[in-house]
Each structure stands twice: as structure tokens, then as C-alpha cells.
Amino acid sequence: MSEIFRDKTKNGKVRPWRERKIENVRYAEYLSILEFKRAHDIRGCGETLRFRKINNQLKLYQTWFCQKRLCPLCNWRKSMKNSSQLKQIIAEAVSRQPKGRFLFLTLTVKNAYGAEELRSSLRVLTKAFNKLTRYKKVTKNLLGYLRSTEITVNDEDRSYNQHLHVLLFVKSSYFTGNNTNYIKQAEWTKLWQRALKVDYEPVVHVEIVKANKRKGTGSLQASAEETAKYEVKSSDYMTADDDRNLEVINDLEYALAGTRQISYGGLFKQIKQDLKLEDVDKGDLVHVGNEEYSKEQMEAAEEVVAKWDFKKQNYFMW
Image (cartoon, rainbow, N blue to C red; front, top):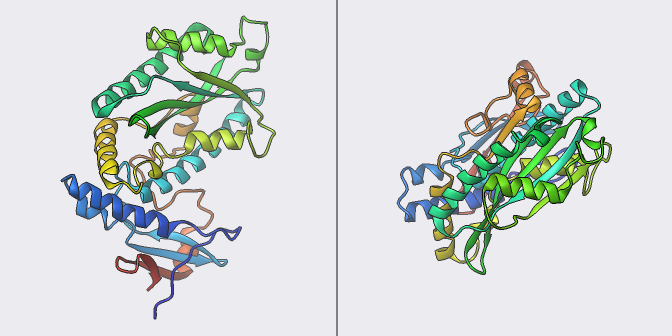
């Protein structure tokens, strides 16, 4: 009998290959019901995984990922790659601007109902954010930023809560000169309302990020993880209610087409170009972190192959 495949981190945590693949197969089935093109191909995403074993650690070196926007398997890999890239960008930004400080900003709008309204609202969010970053009081102390979109589903009224998470890198002068530089939360709210051109007061939250705090709320790591995480959690469209899941997936597939989850600006964008970091949305999801091993080491290492068994719903050593 074949051995069940397990891939563990250096800390002994089991990587969720099986959980994400089960969700991927279910997602493919939903797309097939909705009659999306190439839905069947998505079942082949991550079906055979080829690793190299080095120092008792497995390093993925070959598989096929479908790259679909809502594929749970691909989104897990994308979040890892986004997180890795952001860590590199932050480290370089601090090296270039050691006196710079970080802020974590959350910007919201009213909930949207249905695919068309969500699609429109996402475009409004992007346009308003670009306008916000051009306001004089914001731009004069802004060094760089990472902006990411998150969407959650409200099951009480079947609406979508679309909002932005923004990691801002600002000059130290942002905290000087009373109110000439510093922007209080109430003022951020007014600026965001102005950028949105709405007659209601949107919910805005801003907090100072403690760059020297290693973990937990308010730490740089927590803020980076929040901006690099999933655009839509798979739990929002993988519930026990199939009819509801089909409706949500159909809405999201339409609304997200042609949009970008993450964008960099200012110094962060420049550093991303300088480090030659690829576009995660279109890039390689096999290599998602800092590659610790040389090509020669990888080629010389033992190969480990895991294959998905659709009946047993698990990966087995091949």
C-alpha cells in the first residue's frame, strides 16, 4: 500500500497540500456546473508534485498550477510568494530609508450586492485610492506603499464587504509639526470620503506599526501578513451550502476579472523593480520563497514524488 504524503516545515508544521487540493477539486466541480471554460483542467492543478529532498526538507521543483483567481491551491501559493516578496521589499526599504516608519491603513466602502455592483465598487476603490495618494498632505511624507484588496461575504444579507489593506511607509517627519504633517484617523476618514465622493462617512482605521515588535497585533510581521494574505478566503465560497457557493463563485469570477489584488507604489514599487521580483498573478508558483539551494544542489538531491488520488482524497508517495 502506498504511503500517505506529508510535507512539513522546519518547525514540524504539516503544509496543507491535502486541504487545498480537496478545495481545488470542489472548486473545479463548481466551475463545471457553472459551465466555465476549461473547468475540467483545473482538477489537474497540483495533481503530481515533484520535490527534491535536501537536509530532510522537501523543496517543490515541478508541478502544474492552474493560476485561476479563486483556486484555493494557487491562492495558498500566491500568498506565500506575496509574503516572501514583501519581506524582501521591506528589508530593502528600511536599508534605504532607516528613519522611515510604517502605518497600517484599512479603507472601506459600503457593502455591494451582486456581481455587477461588486465589480463597479472594486473599480471605485482603486480609483479613489490612487486619488488619496495624490493628496498633498498624504504625498508629502509618503515614501512607498503596498495596497491589497480583500472581499468577505456577509451571509445575513448576502452582500460583499470589499475593502483595502494598505501598508504605508512614511518619512519620520510625518510625526512632527503638530497637524501640519500628522494625519489623525478622523482626517484620514475625511480624505477617504473625499476621494470616494460619497455622502456617508466610510469606516477607516489607521495604526502605527511597531517595526521592532517581532509578532502579534501592531507588529510589522502581522501587518505584512495582513496585506499579503488571500483576496477572498476559500471558506467564504466553500461552505456546506452548494447553491450559495455557486452564486458567490459566479459573482466573484465576474467581479474580479481584470482586477489586481495587490499593487505597489513609490519606493516599494521601485525596489520591486530593482530586485527583479516577478508579477505574482502571472508568475511561477513552484518557487515561492527565497531559493536557498543552487541548481546543482537541487539536481543532485533525492527526488520525492507525490500524486493525488481522487478517490481516496489524499496525496500518496509515488
